[in-house]
Length: 117
Length: 113
Image (tube, rainbow over all chains, first blue to last red; front, top):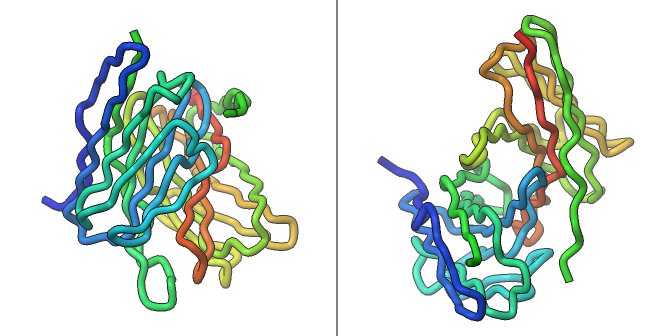
């Protein structure tokens, strides 16, 4: 079945460590997104990528890094520079057509809950 | 640094009544809007979308209204059921732009049996 998969579901990190969250999609979508969600709050955009080997900062990119070496994969690294990394992280992908018109809504993975211990 | 966001507003509705969830968007260039439903601990699920060349779109038990003049979007749920209890988000993006998809703050819907 086509879809978007995030792993792991739960992740624990010691202070000062970098961790990488995985996001894989087999929907053949060009655009992929990472969002952060804190308890009782909305989704804030961290990074997004329109195409392989290209990505842009979102609204809260500080302390995070991404790569887009393959169309299917958009891993997010939470670095030690991120002062408050404990949150729920959501990855999404979206299909855009000619003329940069969205062909579909954004499809979401089930999220990774990161906790700093 | 990161700003601390507001906690979600809550809408409490009696089972069987209609619900109206509102969303204000900020980018006047946004022209594609999506409503999502998020249950606790899960990723958002698509409900309905609307493009800026429309004022209204209907789905099964849901209707989205778009007022571009005041940059306002609403989601109407008919005959609200306990299974509708969740957090609802609107999202906006701009056709022909950089494919950035931005979400609103969200509203928590509580259905009272």
